[in-house]
Image 1: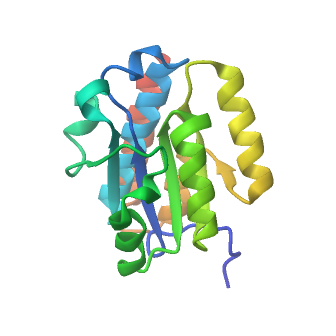
Image 2 (image 1 turned 90 degrees about the vertical axis):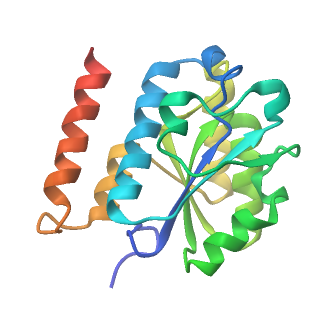
Length: 190
């Protein structure tokens, strides 16, 4: 029996929050964050997890950044900071029998934080990939992660999440996941 805070490909969904053209360049540590978000998206797709994406006021903040947009389904547009203001977000995860949701994106202290708190209130188990969320200022990101962990979110990393989704070294996609890990390592060190 698995611990309730352990994710799997069968019970988890991925939510990519507001990684948009006009805001992303202002995010502290943006390149590493984008590499880790792309890694999560690729891992989720490889392992069959449902992936959703949102955009905050795209008329003003632009669309999802191209390196991520090409990997993602159509974005749900929103004006509220919480993604839960878009009813299909929580509803789609429920319909797919995904009681666990991993969040990544920006900004950690605004849209990510409010989404996480709303998902917790709706009885989802919420995970945050610490290396795949960001804010303009590191202090805002750090305090958001601390607050959300105290509120009941599970803070992890992108690589830990993908290996949890995989579960075993004899998983049919393990070699493909290992290649994603190697590609991510190269991208982070160049």
